[in-house]
Length: 203
Figure 1: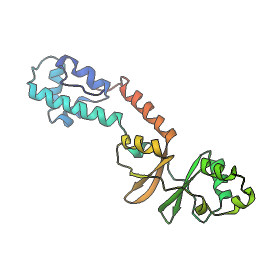
Figure 2: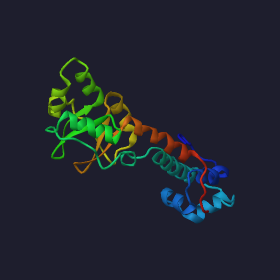
Figure 3: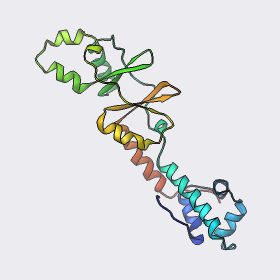
Figure 4: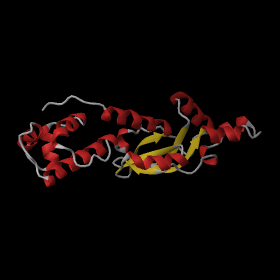
């Protein structure tokens, strides 16, 4: 529900309930009393423009936060990774078992590279001896590390990163705690649709 503008008093209750807010929570967000919100919704108060502006801004802010979840809500955790010294064969087995197409290469919680099905397939199909490739270390074939974001970042930071990378790693105070792939972005759409649907709330 972007760009709400100043909400008309007659529409306040409708908008509040659509966002799943109670009168008490809206009052807290807007810095007014619950009784004041109740009077506006009942048509018993004629609010000033300044008061409506405060309430509308609170609704706008809550709506934006609700429809744009943080990175933490989208990430997969615990993270599945490989060490640079593990073999290509080991990486392939992990991807097959976990039904994933990419793996970060982690060395003592340091993001040192990445490996994808596409990269491995390219090397295997290049005419090189498959058995020798499978026995070699991941470090011989890994790509650049996946980019990193904080778990508290808004999910909108993911779009440009996932346009150029197979995945994005998520950190919490410097520690890698999760991963987000292009498939995870579909969660954003489901979350957005849920937040835009009318929800029941107590007055």
